[in-house]
Image 1: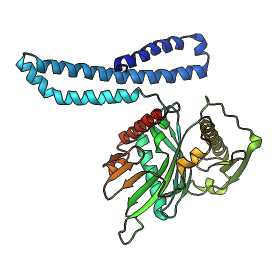
Image 2 (image 1 turned 120 degrees about the horizontal axis):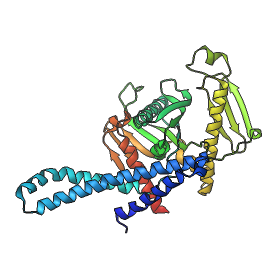
Image 3 (image 1 turned 135 degrees about the vertical axis):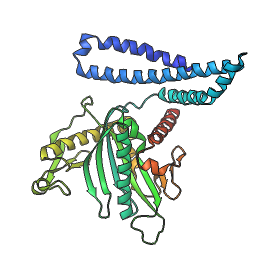
Image 4 (image 1 turned 180 degrees about the vertical axis):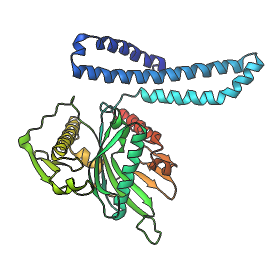
Length: 357
């Protein structure tokens, strides 16, 4: 098995080659190639930066161990005081590097399309869907991503029956990729007058957004485009014009809709981008020989039994059942203050995927 230093060496070599290509006039005049190499360079620099932190921590940790075993008593006493924190930093940076060296999700750099739907649980399920959206919005914002609501259907007692949003920023799909599935909550609902514990659910689906470098052809003859009056907030303009747009892709049956834009043209453009993203995901699933069934199994029907994660409020605990990871900071997680939890689950699932290959 290669050492970590040997594993990092090819990244330095590739970075030198990428820098050479980026100065090539033929590459500079090719926007798509330039973007591709720029993204690759960012990825390589990130790996090398994590590696440098580890090698510095390793060197310092080794120096302290030598000092402890040396003849200089004063130096040994100083080393002993630093030993615990140095060892912790060494172990943390080593794990960070090992995780970073895992082959990345090829779509990790893309923007994300996030869909949340209320499932089993009546009014509480809608409230829970709203709580999930707030959690993701806070966590994504803390990571420097921008969240834009594209379409929503509000529930009567608060929250949402359904919500679709774009999470924009390099790496946003990689950050949220592991969130698809059924999220189950156990708590006393706001609508419960007798203090009884209820179980509700909401489904989450995350897709990598197809941007300009993805070649997905959409034939306008395959589309049924409907316009209607938007509902909800937005002022007089929303209520007086047919600004909302719904597009049905007849060959696949995929339906997308948007009403949060300020004009019919803007909503139509957003719908077409959403459709392109869903067709891109469908193509990926076909290539993986899983077809459309993968989407169905990832999202499920919103039933309590098809869960990937349980949020237990009385115990302040959240458990991801796919990788058996439990965190006892549920209240902080819901405030978007524990982004490390998402990254931990992402890494564990990535390891599982690679082991199955």
